[in-house]
Amino acid sequence: MNDIEEGKAFAPKFDPDGLVTAVATDAGSGELLMVAHMNAQALQKTIETGEAHYFSRSRRKLWRKGEESGHVQRVLELRVDCDQDAVWLKVEQQGPGACHTGRRSCFYRAIPLGKAGAVTLEFREADKTFDPKAVYPKR
Amino acid sequence: MNDIEEGKAFAPKFDPDGLVTAVATDAGSGELLMVAHMNAQALQKTIETGEAHYFSRSRRKLWRKGEESGHVQRVLELRVDCDQDAVWLKVEQQGPGACHTGRRSCFYRAIPLGKAGAVTLEFREADKTFDPKAVYPKR
Image (cartoon, rainbow over all chains, first blue to last red; front, top):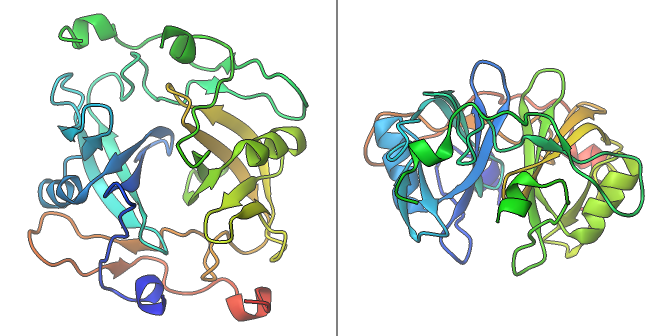
């Protein structure tokens, strides 16, 4: 445990599906853009190229962010957490957004706090910065 | 799918273990503090109280952040992502840090980019902001 947390050896702790959690924030604003996953290959490609690669759990394949949309993420810094099961990408987001719904960030809705019972989400970024139908014609 | 992504109904998509991913950033600096998980109860408690609650996978129990250390997280805003399997907490971190190793953030080491082959981590925040042995005497 001490080596994992206090050492300099990179020993990613993949979950039973072979994945670590990957969190991408905008290097300039600090805004959280997206949460995704990486397998060993996505991690290696990201490290080698400095461009964000993820593993798509729905499509079961390696996915270079922006390969379809052109909305590539240049990684300015990559960090790993204490127990090495999550990585943080500080990225320069190319193009109008990171989210497949057509928004800059995937986190465009807030959950109101301080209430018990049913929750109604509040849009914080309702407007789309691009048209997903134009950007992902194959879907 | 459209309702999940474009609607106002909160319908968290828990994984087979009953968890969503929870990402906490410092509301002031934007720094990524930690990545953890929430079950339905942790989510509900966080919403009701405005204090971060997580589910500890190692201890298999609900965990109010700071219950042992006093390093409570006050949630200023809570957001959910497009497919509702991750939440983002913008928090005011009480006390000297969020990480159980004694640092402000769990992401205190960088993975150097642009190299193939073996990776040696680089400490970005080597110094501890508190002594974990003093803060967690029971561990």
